Figure (cartoon, one colour):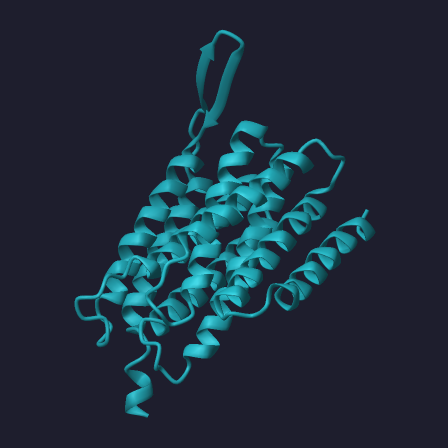
Length: 271
Protein backbone atom coordinates (compact mmCIF):
# COMPACT_ATOMS: atom_id res chain seq x y z
CA UNK A 1 0.00 0.00 0.00
CA UNK A 2 2.80 2.39 0.85
CA UNK A 3 4.45 1.75 -2.50
CA UNK A 4 1.28 2.65 -4.41
CA UNK A 5 0.82 5.83 -2.40
CA UNK A 6 4.25 7.10 -3.48
CA UNK A 7 2.93 7.36 -7.05
CA UNK A 8 0.15 9.78 -6.09
CA UNK A 9 0.63 13.53 -5.54
CA UNK A 10 -0.02 15.37 -2.32
CA UNK A 11 -3.73 16.02 -1.93
CA UNK A 12 -2.97 19.44 -0.42
CA UNK A 13 -0.89 20.49 -3.41
CA UNK A 14 -3.50 19.30 -5.88
CA UNK A 15 -6.21 21.12 -3.96
CA UNK A 16 -4.28 24.39 -3.92
CA UNK A 17 -3.53 24.13 -7.64
CA UNK A 18 -7.12 23.32 -8.61
CA UNK A 19 -8.51 26.11 -6.41
CA UNK A 20 -6.12 28.67 -7.88
CA UNK A 21 -7.00 27.84 -11.49
CA UNK A 22 -10.75 27.68 -10.86
CA UNK A 23 -10.71 30.96 -8.93
CA UNK A 24 -9.13 32.60 -11.95
CA UNK A 25 -11.98 31.43 -14.18
CA UNK A 26 -14.63 32.39 -11.61
CA UNK A 27 -13.29 35.95 -11.38
CA UNK A 28 -14.02 36.50 -15.06
CA UNK A 29 -17.74 36.23 -14.23
CA UNK A 30 -17.56 38.45 -11.17
CA UNK A 31 -15.54 41.32 -12.61
CA UNK A 32 -16.92 43.35 -15.50
CA UNK A 33 -14.44 45.12 -17.76
CA UNK A 34 -14.62 46.97 -21.09
CA UNK A 35 -13.57 45.21 -24.28
CA UNK A 36 -10.46 46.33 -26.12
CA UNK A 37 -10.02 45.53 -29.81
CA UNK A 38 -6.52 44.90 -31.12
CA UNK A 39 -6.34 46.08 -34.72
CA UNK A 40 -3.63 45.88 -37.36
CA UNK A 41 -4.31 47.56 -40.68
CA UNK A 42 -2.07 47.02 -43.69
CA UNK A 43 -2.62 47.48 -47.43
CA UNK A 44 -5.15 44.79 -48.37
CA UNK A 45 -5.19 43.33 -44.84
CA UNK A 46 -7.20 44.19 -41.74
CA UNK A 47 -6.78 42.29 -38.49
CA UNK A 48 -9.12 42.83 -35.54
CA UNK A 49 -9.20 40.70 -32.40
CA UNK A 50 -11.27 41.55 -29.30
CA UNK A 51 -9.32 41.40 -26.05
CA UNK A 52 -11.33 41.02 -22.85
CA UNK A 53 -10.70 40.25 -19.22
CA UNK A 54 -11.52 36.62 -20.03
CA UNK A 55 -8.60 36.49 -22.48
CA UNK A 56 -6.17 37.79 -19.88
CA UNK A 57 -7.53 35.49 -17.17
CA UNK A 58 -7.28 32.44 -19.41
CA UNK A 59 -3.62 33.24 -20.08
CA UNK A 60 -3.09 33.75 -16.34
CA UNK A 61 -4.82 30.44 -15.56
CA UNK A 62 -2.61 28.63 -18.07
CA UNK A 63 0.50 30.18 -16.53
CA UNK A 64 -0.68 29.14 -13.07
CA UNK A 65 -1.27 25.61 -14.35
CA UNK A 66 2.19 25.32 -15.86
CA UNK A 67 3.87 26.65 -12.71
CA UNK A 68 1.67 24.53 -10.45
CA UNK A 69 2.28 21.35 -12.42
CA UNK A 70 6.01 21.99 -12.28
CA UNK A 71 5.70 22.40 -8.50
CA UNK A 72 3.62 19.22 -8.30
CA UNK A 73 5.91 16.99 -10.35
CA UNK A 74 9.06 18.28 -8.62
CA UNK A 75 7.79 16.48 -5.55
CA UNK A 76 7.69 13.10 -7.33
CA UNK A 77 10.27 10.73 -5.83
CA UNK A 78 11.24 9.35 -9.25
CA UNK A 79 11.73 12.63 -11.13
CA UNK A 80 15.16 13.53 -9.77
CA UNK A 81 16.98 15.81 -12.19
CA UNK A 82 14.99 14.71 -15.24
CA UNK A 83 13.17 17.43 -17.21
CA UNK A 84 9.44 17.57 -16.67
CA UNK A 85 8.40 19.66 -19.65
CA UNK A 86 6.29 16.85 -21.12
CA UNK A 87 4.18 16.78 -17.95
CA UNK A 88 3.33 20.48 -18.30
CA UNK A 89 2.00 20.35 -21.87
CA UNK A 90 -1.41 18.71 -21.47
CA UNK A 91 -2.36 20.43 -18.18
CA UNK A 92 -1.56 23.85 -19.66
CA UNK A 93 -3.42 23.00 -22.85
CA UNK A 94 -6.37 21.73 -20.80
CA UNK A 95 -6.65 25.10 -19.08
CA UNK A 96 -6.57 26.94 -22.40
CA UNK A 97 -9.26 24.69 -23.86
CA UNK A 98 -11.50 24.99 -20.78
CA UNK A 99 -11.29 28.76 -21.04
CA UNK A 100 -12.73 28.79 -24.57
CA UNK A 101 -16.24 27.41 -23.86
CA UNK A 102 -16.42 29.15 -20.48
CA UNK A 103 -15.92 32.48 -22.23
CA UNK A 104 -18.65 31.69 -24.78
CA UNK A 105 -21.34 30.30 -22.49
CA UNK A 106 -23.86 32.70 -20.89
CA UNK A 107 -24.31 33.00 -17.14
CA UNK A 108 -26.53 30.35 -15.65
CA UNK A 109 -26.70 26.64 -14.94
CA UNK A 110 -25.00 25.76 -18.24
CA UNK A 111 -21.93 27.76 -17.30
CA UNK A 112 -21.73 26.11 -13.89
CA UNK A 113 -22.02 22.64 -15.44
CA UNK A 114 -19.17 23.48 -17.81
CA UNK A 115 -17.22 24.90 -14.85
CA UNK A 116 -17.65 21.66 -12.87
CA UNK A 117 -16.78 19.58 -15.93
CA UNK A 118 -13.61 21.63 -16.43
CA UNK A 119 -12.67 21.11 -12.79
CA UNK A 120 -13.03 17.34 -13.25
CA UNK A 121 -10.80 17.43 -16.32
CA UNK A 122 -8.13 19.33 -14.42
CA UNK A 123 -8.15 16.82 -11.55
CA UNK A 124 -7.82 13.93 -14.01
CA UNK A 125 -4.98 15.46 -15.99
CA UNK A 126 -3.02 16.49 -12.87
CA UNK A 127 -3.25 13.03 -11.33
CA UNK A 128 -2.54 11.19 -14.58
CA UNK A 129 0.46 13.33 -15.48
CA UNK A 130 1.91 12.83 -12.01
CA UNK A 131 1.55 9.06 -12.31
CA UNK A 132 3.23 8.96 -15.74
CA UNK A 133 6.42 10.46 -14.30
CA UNK A 134 7.32 6.86 -13.38
CA UNK A 135 6.70 4.43 -16.30
CA UNK A 136 6.98 1.44 -13.93
CA UNK A 137 4.13 2.68 -11.73
CA UNK A 138 1.36 0.08 -11.26
CA UNK A 139 -1.26 2.42 -12.70
CA UNK A 140 0.89 3.79 -15.54
CA UNK A 141 -1.08 2.02 -18.28
CA UNK A 142 -4.36 3.32 -16.91
CA UNK A 143 -2.98 6.87 -16.61
CA UNK A 144 -1.59 6.69 -20.15
CA UNK A 145 -4.97 5.60 -21.52
CA UNK A 146 -6.69 8.37 -19.59
CA UNK A 147 -4.33 11.05 -20.88
CA UNK A 148 -4.73 9.82 -24.44
CA UNK A 149 -8.52 9.91 -24.25
CA UNK A 150 -8.43 13.31 -22.55
CA UNK A 151 -6.14 14.74 -25.22
CA UNK A 152 -8.52 13.78 -28.04
CA UNK A 153 -11.50 15.07 -26.05
CA UNK A 154 -9.72 18.39 -25.55
CA UNK A 155 -9.12 18.73 -29.27
CA UNK A 156 -12.77 17.96 -29.99
CA UNK A 157 -13.88 20.60 -27.46
CA UNK A 158 -11.47 23.16 -28.88
CA UNK A 159 -12.46 22.56 -32.50
CA UNK A 160 -16.14 22.73 -31.58
CA UNK A 161 -15.61 25.96 -29.62
CA UNK A 162 -13.67 27.56 -32.46
CA UNK A 163 -16.49 26.77 -34.88
CA UNK A 164 -19.13 27.98 -32.45
CA UNK A 165 -17.34 31.29 -31.92
CA UNK A 166 -17.04 31.89 -35.67
CA UNK A 167 -13.31 32.47 -35.49
CA UNK A 168 -11.73 33.71 -38.70
CA UNK A 169 -9.42 31.65 -40.89
CA UNK A 170 -6.17 33.44 -39.97
CA UNK A 171 -6.73 32.45 -36.33
CA UNK A 172 -8.21 29.00 -36.93
CA UNK A 173 -5.23 27.77 -38.96
CA UNK A 174 -2.42 28.44 -36.44
CA UNK A 175 -4.50 27.36 -33.43
CA UNK A 176 -5.33 23.97 -34.99
CA UNK A 177 -1.73 23.59 -36.20
CA UNK A 178 -0.22 24.22 -32.75
CA UNK A 179 -2.77 22.30 -30.67
CA UNK A 180 -2.90 19.25 -32.96
CA UNK A 181 0.89 19.16 -33.08
CA UNK A 182 1.27 19.39 -29.30
CA UNK A 183 -1.40 16.78 -28.61
CA UNK A 184 0.08 14.26 -31.05
CA UNK A 185 3.57 14.97 -29.69
CA UNK A 186 2.47 14.25 -26.12
CA UNK A 187 0.50 11.12 -27.03
CA UNK A 188 3.41 9.67 -29.00
CA UNK A 189 5.77 10.42 -26.12
CA UNK A 190 3.60 8.38 -23.75
CA UNK A 191 5.20 5.17 -24.99
CA UNK A 192 7.50 5.27 -21.95
CA UNK A 193 10.65 6.22 -23.86
CA UNK A 194 12.45 9.55 -24.13
CA UNK A 195 11.90 9.77 -27.88
CA UNK A 196 10.19 12.86 -29.29
CA UNK A 197 8.48 12.51 -32.68
CA UNK A 198 8.77 16.13 -33.76
CA UNK A 199 8.54 15.41 -37.54
CA UNK A 200 5.36 13.39 -37.11
CA UNK A 201 3.85 15.96 -34.74
CA UNK A 202 4.57 18.79 -37.16
CA UNK A 203 3.18 16.80 -40.08
CA UNK A 204 0.02 15.89 -38.17
CA UNK A 205 -0.46 19.52 -37.16
CA UNK A 206 -0.09 20.69 -40.77
CA UNK A 207 -2.52 18.08 -42.11
CA UNK A 208 -5.15 18.86 -39.46
CA UNK A 209 -4.83 22.62 -40.02
CA UNK A 210 -5.16 22.12 -43.78
CA UNK A 211 -8.30 20.04 -43.26
CA UNK A 212 -9.65 22.68 -40.90
CA UNK A 213 -8.98 25.40 -43.46
CA UNK A 214 -10.78 23.39 -46.12
CA UNK A 215 -13.80 22.77 -43.87
CA UNK A 216 -13.93 26.36 -42.64
CA UNK A 217 -16.30 27.49 -45.38
CA UNK A 218 -18.48 24.36 -45.37
CA UNK A 219 -21.94 24.67 -43.79
CA UNK A 220 -21.08 22.47 -40.80
CA UNK A 221 -22.39 22.65 -37.26
CA UNK A 222 -19.78 23.02 -34.48
CA UNK A 223 -19.96 19.34 -33.49
CA UNK A 224 -19.69 18.24 -37.13
CA UNK A 225 -16.61 20.42 -37.56
CA UNK A 226 -15.08 19.03 -34.37
CA UNK A 227 -15.63 15.41 -35.38
CA UNK A 228 -14.31 16.01 -38.89
CA UNK A 229 -11.05 17.35 -37.42
CA UNK A 230 -10.64 14.96 -34.48
CA UNK A 231 -10.91 11.88 -36.71
CA UNK A 232 -7.79 12.69 -38.77
CA UNK A 233 -5.83 13.64 -35.64
CA UNK A 234 -6.67 10.29 -34.03
CA UNK A 235 -5.95 8.36 -37.22
CA UNK A 236 -2.61 10.00 -38.00
CA UNK A 237 -1.38 9.63 -34.44
CA UNK A 238 -2.32 5.95 -34.51
CA UNK A 239 -0.57 5.52 -37.85
CA UNK A 240 2.60 7.11 -36.48
CA UNK A 241 2.60 4.83 -33.43
CA UNK A 242 2.09 1.73 -35.58
CA UNK A 243 4.87 2.63 -38.01
CA UNK A 244 7.21 3.31 -35.10
CA UNK A 245 6.61 -0.26 -33.97
CA UNK A 246 7.65 -1.44 -37.47
CA UNK A 247 4.14 -2.48 -38.47
CA UNK A 248 3.84 -2.86 -42.28
CA UNK A 249 2.31 0.23 -43.86
CA UNK A 250 -0.63 -1.59 -45.44
CA UNK A 251 -1.67 -3.17 -42.15
CA UNK A 252 -0.94 0.00 -40.16
CA UNK A 253 -3.16 2.09 -42.44
CA UNK A 254 -6.29 -0.05 -42.04
CA UNK A 255 -7.25 1.21 -38.60
CA UNK A 256 -6.64 4.93 -39.35
CA UNK A 257 -8.66 4.75 -42.57
CA UNK A 258 -11.58 3.19 -40.70
CA UNK A 259 -11.37 5.84 -37.98
CA UNK A 260 -11.40 8.73 -40.45
CA UNK A 261 -14.29 7.17 -42.34
CA UNK A 262 -16.26 6.59 -39.14
CA UNK A 263 -15.65 10.14 -37.91
CA UNK A 264 -16.69 11.72 -41.20
CA UNK A 265 -19.75 9.50 -41.60
CA UNK A 266 -20.79 10.34 -38.03
CA UNK A 267 -20.37 14.05 -38.76
CA UNK A 268 -22.47 13.70 -41.91
CA UNK A 269 -25.24 11.82 -40.09
CA UNK A 270 -25.42 14.53 -37.42
CA UNK A 271 -26.63 17.03 -40.03
